[in-house]
Structures are given as structure tokens and as C-alpha cells.
Image 1 (cartoon, helix red, strand yellow):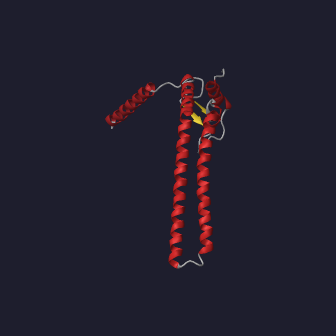
Image 2 (cartoon, rainbow, N blue to C red):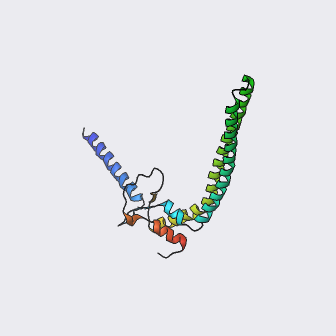
Image 3 (cartoon, rainbow, N blue to C red):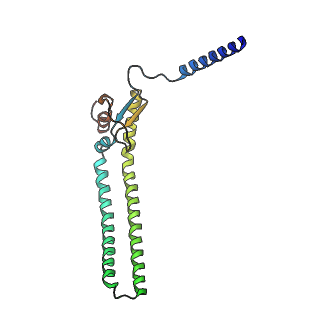
Length: 183
């Protein structure tokens, strides 16, 4: 019984020593301050030099895509109206052929719409990527300077931050650095 107690105590001692060594090996957290901060990436992006030009270019390209889709939509609507007016006098075979034509025209419209949406998203990503890279570099620099572990984005979808100390908000500092303002 006594030897069993000794082995249990010895086991606890080994665990305590391992825990102490493991904790000592962890990087030390900065003293006296939080290890996190937050930004609003939407605010930062809108104030980043080059954003207005990129957004304007993207809007112009999307407007062109929309005009193309609106023209195709008008053609589809016109074909449907014509079919509705003629369907009574059409033979069952002719009616079925017209319905197939309309189905193909609708599929063409849907395919073009999906392709346009995909192209618009890709183009937006292309235009915003250089801005987002600059923003990320500034945020990473601030995180390193201030020895922060994490920087949250309070404007991210699904963000669950309900309340935060404004002192922890790096948004204006990031904007100043991006725009060349002083701190």
C-alpha cells in the first residue's frame, strides 16, 4: 500500500514538473495590456487610396454586363409574349417547338447571367486584391509592433462582437498609415 502511494506521489510530481516546464516554454504574453485589438475592414477599405478608382472601374464594367443581360431579358420577354398571343392558333407540334425554343432562350439567359456574375466577382477580386494586400501588411505591422496575438475584423460576416473598448480599435491608425497621415 505504501509503495502504491509513493508511485502515485511520484506520478503527480512528474506531471507537476512537466506542466511547469511546458508553461515556462510558452511565449510570454506582453505585460500590462491586451493581446488583441480590432479593425473595421469595410471602413479601412473605403478610405484606402485607390479604392474609389477601383470601385468606379468595377461599377462601369458591371453596368456593361447588366446592359447585355437586360437586352437578352427583353428578347426573352418579347418571345414569351408572342408565344402567349400565338399559342391558341398553333398546332400541338408547333406549340411544343415554340416552348422548346423559349426553354432554350431561358437557359441561355440563365447561363449568361451566371457567367456575368462569376466574371463580376472575379473582376472585383482582381481589383481589390492589391488594396487588401496593402491593408493586410499594415495590420500585420501594427500587430507585431504592439505585440498583439489577434486582430479581429468587426465588419466580417458572422462577427459576434457585441461590445468592445474603443481603445482597442486600430481602424483609424491603419487608415492613417495607408493614407500617409501622421499618428
